[in-house]
Image 1 (tube, rainbow, N blue to C red):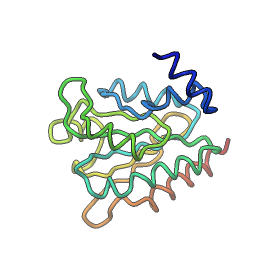
Image 2 (image 1 turned 30 degrees about the vertical axis):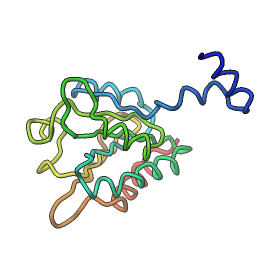
Image 3 (image 1 turned 60 degrees about the vertical axis):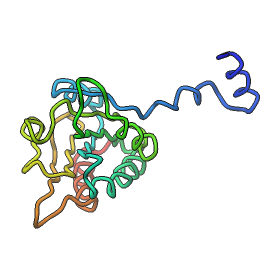
Length: 174
């Protein structure tokens, strides 16, 4: 059956690579060590971490802008890592998270925190007041260069994220 599908796709001019990308956006559950490992894998690049949840309306509205930002600055070595805070059961990613990612996400690492915001996730990941959306910008050296936090007076907007990325880019050109 797989060979028929492969033959059919090749006949349509589709490469075998396209067969493997259907699940490319599926997330994986990580603890803090797994998150740190994902960030370390991008050392030498500027990493934008978009902390979000499916229940967070501003997160959902701004998510496409994170994808656009990473795409726009890919040539500058900017990558996107998303960190979702929907509640998980063990290591199983909620179906609604993978569904959303398959529809909206671009390239990048898509992670789901094993720690809920209401328990210890906010403290572990440094998310002030457990408020989402929250963005963490890592410099090429792998260290946190900026945090864009949501507060009552000043929401975490993509204008602020773009400014932070531009600042990091100006300090560490390729």
